[in-house]
Length: 444
View 1: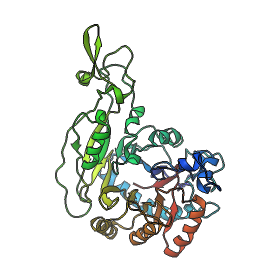
View 2 (view 1 turned 135 degrees about the vertical axis):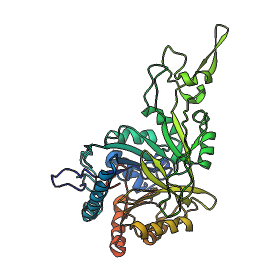
View 3 (view 1 turned 90 degrees about the vertical axis):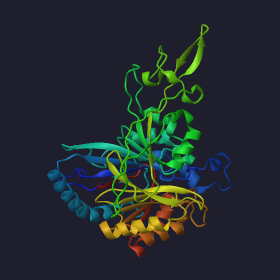
View 4 (view 1 turned 180 degrees about the horizontal axis):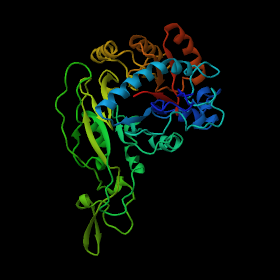
């Protein structure tokens, strides 16, 4: 269960992490194991299709995390009071959170709800945190990555977890399992009923090289220039450069890729972009129309621990990591008083990033929750950690809790969690496999 306040309700100070996907790029079950099963069949893939995905910890979509952020807007005096109360809540909740992490028949945390360890019962997934807001608060929804499974994840988890929208999207890198859901963002944006109606674009934060790749894959989503994301002061003593400002907007003119979702009876869906449509011959003349696609405000972030940015009010610090010897992906650090570190695609943590994380530990304390890549169980991979490397990194970073993501069908959820329990006791760090739909209350 989630940490509770004195009145028995989920703690009203908490934000929440919701794991929308925890598998590899291929996902689990692996299609080949289902379409051409071996004899005997793949045990994990067989389990992954035995029960519905929402009750099946071995069914895994592409890695993605939703941050349900309790954003606060207070006066200076109120802010000081609230930060003190949050610090107290942090201290009070640590024991509860650690105890909760060992619920279930195999001693491993399976959900922040009253869900049983085997996930076989019908579950009420709506009470993980108290969704009521106090004056000066609002919920903001910040998602990390939107890959090939994005639409499936939205339909499966947004309703179950009371997620109405996305306020900001942060991309770790430009591979298919992180960005190929960008076209489906329009499914969460209202269709304008009149050409003059405004549809707010979604702020998408990404590195420069990722933006270049997105332009190649989605030219119809990137017709207008990206802008640098406003930078915040570094969380370590050095200061960041001044922020850039500006507003951009994106509307498509490509009938091949944009889809067929224009408003019936009109020739444009956006008066500001009406002249960018594709020419259509009608009665010897040409009428220019535009097609409705995802509306996105592209914001470029720096690949540097010294360049934090604000995503829907949440301060986020990029953590450059190697995703293969020739490629840089981004992890992210966010949250106070709970420090959250999310690294979903990594083969090596560079010295600068490692030094930053250790300096932050000395400055503000241990990582409260680490999310770390772990592709294979016992053999190395060129672009991802395998389990021994993941555990070595966890041992070096010394978080209070760690959840693994990016797993292939080599990981049987309950069996591996049982093995990780012994490691956790020995190292005094609670390490577990995450699963799709898992939600964890945190103080941000």
